[in-house]
Amino acid sequence: MSPCLGKQLLPLGLLTALAATAADEETNYRRAMAPALPSVSITADGKPQRLEFDFGRDRGTAWLARKGEMYVDTWVRHYGLLCSTYEVGLRFGQGNPGCANVEWFDDPTWLTSRKQCNDAVVNHIGVNTDIELQKVFEKATCAERLIRCVSERCP
Image 1: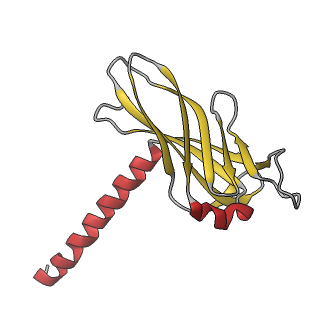
Image 2: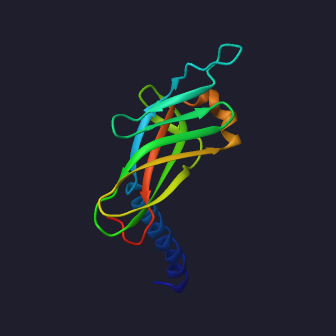
């Protein structure tokens, strides 16, 4: 093998390893998706003030307001006696009915971070504002709630 060829393969191998690590990390999320439902709160011109998302029993709820405000309320279960820190995030996108083939507007916004121990089930409630979401509010049809463990010792 020529020395030049070896130098070209090294970065490619490194990129492949990094991509595999990112894909593995992403699969460690606990995920739930939900379609958008207009809220009963409407603007003067009859448009919904916010979109609501119900991820299902024991998976929580969320909403996205027209001004870019977002809210999540979900329970997170920790498995094990040793402590771990969990974060809950949201992301929004546009997809077919039932949230198939979703094109996400951005990466998740992480709204909570809580340390949990001893098989605890903890309620995570978080709020944030992302003014960039104002631009895509009318297009949002789906939300995804993500839970990730960010400790050294994740179950």
